[in-house]
Image (cartoon, rainbow, N blue to C red; front, side, top):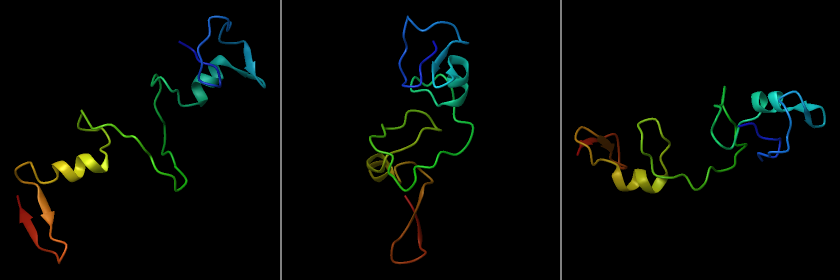
Length: 94
C-alpha cells in the first residue's frame, strides 16, 4: 500500500503518478524514502549522526540487532562463546 511523504496511507490519494507533495508523486516517494511499515529495505548505510538507536527489541532471528541488556544478560551462555577478561587478553571459555 503506498504511503505519502508523511508516512500515512490514505484512501483519498490517487494513482502512483499523482503529485502528493512539492512535485513528488507516490511512486517516487515509495522508491526514495524508507517506509515505516517495512515494505522496502535500506539500500545503503544509515548514519544516525552520533545519535542513539533506542528502544531496540530483543532479537528473534540471527540477523536482528541486539540491545545492550540482551547482550549483557546472554553473553557467554552458549557453549564455545569466549569472553575476554578486562584485566588483559585472557580468553576464558564459558
